[in-house]
Length: 230
Image (tube, rainbow, N blue to C red; front, side):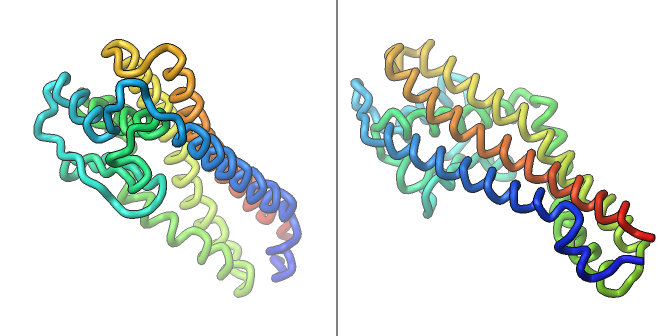
C-alpha cells in the first residue's frame, strides 16, 4: 500500500540534492555571465550585429533577430526562424553577450542543416509538454488515492521528460562548439576573448547538465516510491 507519508519518504534526499544542484548551476551561470558582461570586446561590435553577420555568412538572411524581455532568456525559435536576444545581450558589446548570441546562431545553423538531435527534440516538444504536466499530478493522485496504476503511468510519462533532457545535452554542446568556431574563424573575438566566451558558454551548458541530473534523480525517486509499495 502507498501511504501519503511516502511522498516525503523514499528518495526525498534526492529531491533536496536536485534542488541544490540546480541552484548552484544557476548561481554559476549568473556569476560567470556577470563577470564577462563587464568585459567589452576589442572590436566593439554588439552581439546582435555579430549574430547578423554570422547568420548572413551561412546564408541565413531570412532569420530575424529581435530583442526579448528578461535576463538570459535568449533562444532560437525554429517555428518562425528567429533569434531572441535578451535585454542583457541585444545591443551589448561584451564578451559574454557575443558568446551567447553566437550560441543561438549555432542553433539556427543546426536547424538549417537538419541536425538530427535537434529534429528529434523538436518532435518531442509537444509530447513532452503534455507528459510533463500530467506526470506529477498522476503520481500525487496515486499516493493519496491509493491507486498504484496511476503511479506506474506517471513514472512512464516522466520517463519522456528524462529522454527530452538527454536529447537536449548534445544539442546545447554542439551549438556552443559551433559558436566558438564561428567567433574564432571570423576573427570576431581574439584568442583571449574566446576563452572568456567559452567560460560563459560552459557555465550555461552546466545548467542543462544540472537539469538532466535533476530529472534523473526525480525518476530514481519515483522508482523508489514505487518499490516501497506493499
